[in-house]
Image 1 (cartoon, helix red, strand yellow):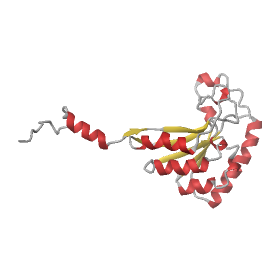
Image 2 (spheres, rainbow, N blue to C red; image 1 turned 90 degrees about the vertical axis):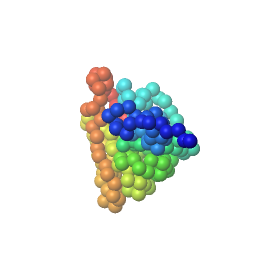
Image 3 (spheres, rainbow, N blue to C red; image 1 turned 60 degrees about the vertical axis):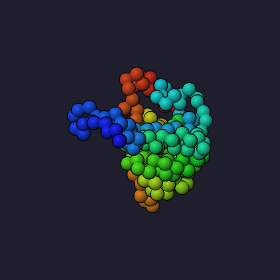
Image 4 (cartoon, rainbow, N blue to C red; image 1 turned 90 degrees about the horizontal axis):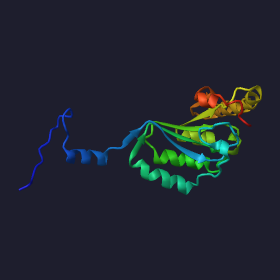
Amino acid sequence: RRRHTRCSRDWSSDVCSSDLKIAMIFQKITVPRLEIHASHYCNLRCDNCNHFSNYGINGNITLQDFYEWNKPWAKKLAPLNYQICGGEPTLNKDLTKICAMARNIWDKCPQMILVTNGFYLQLHENLPDVLEKNNIKIIISIHHDSYEYKQKLEKIKKTILDWSQNYKFKFAFRESFKEWKSTFKKKIGRAHV
């Protein structure tokens, strides 16, 4: 004779432990945001960088590492927002392949974003095509409001606007320096370009 465990199906009371174990096998954990550095290098040396790029950390993630670090988690996590960032992700020669692989692994992720300062977009001629095909939004993170920085930013804005004439992808320009915590603002005077 089969032994039955009596447990309540009313979610306001305790749930049977065997039901909970079964539910956990099939349910992924929803996380608000998941980030990965495509590169630890950065062309900027902003004081108090919250990604520690001001310490001259170097290295790019390989496609193999990217796959091995992401694939097992895709069975367990359901990110609402997945961000490819850095350092500066455009310094990784495999960025477009990383973007395509990210969408393939995290195919159900509702919002996938590439965050870059934009200074090396020209290294990735097919990036707008990859953004469009994989439904990836690009955010240009603005690190300073000095005249010199804004002048350099104009070329980046033109590149994004030119791309958007031929490709359908979402983009935004985010004044990141305005969102930094007060501990960062005290020393922000320098975003070394």
